[in-house]
Length: 188
Image 1 (cartoon, one colour):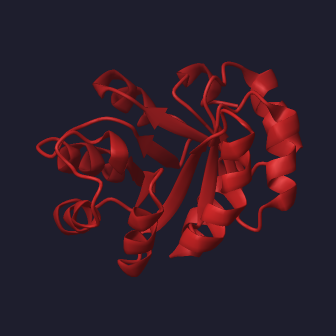
Image 2 (cartoon, rainbow, N blue to C red; image 1 turned 45 degrees about the vertical axis):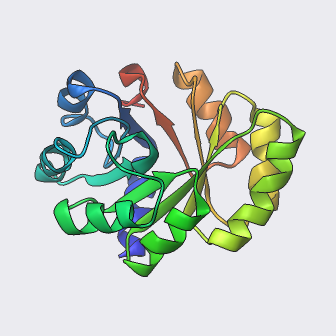
């Protein structure tokens, strides 16, 4: 199953990240094979995931952004039991561990806002063992390149990506893929 996710990112390294129903409709016909779902609530998330899956795309739910779900492991159990989500994105290592137990794809998201956050990446990645890490904001190719060099885990970069030049700089920095809510980047 993990192989399928990696192959999808190799085939289409731009990940469509959606934050509303308009983005949902636009991503369905994009080349992106992986979709990051960054919105919803406990009443709507199953339908959003079902729509993404109906277009043969991998649905990754940013569990921290789903209204009505807690930061406890039971939230992962809920997604597994009541949706057809392929995996989760989170900033919480405990949720990554639970998702791994449930055979979901996992992405541990880091906001690199200072040197302390940067220094925590390696430690938290070793502890949680996610399938991928995502680094935000992406527009720091020098820092992203350093993270890719020290990380044993494949790196996704996201946040503030606005054009092809940004995407190319990040891929050259060593990331596996780039996530973006900017639909103009989805077709590169």
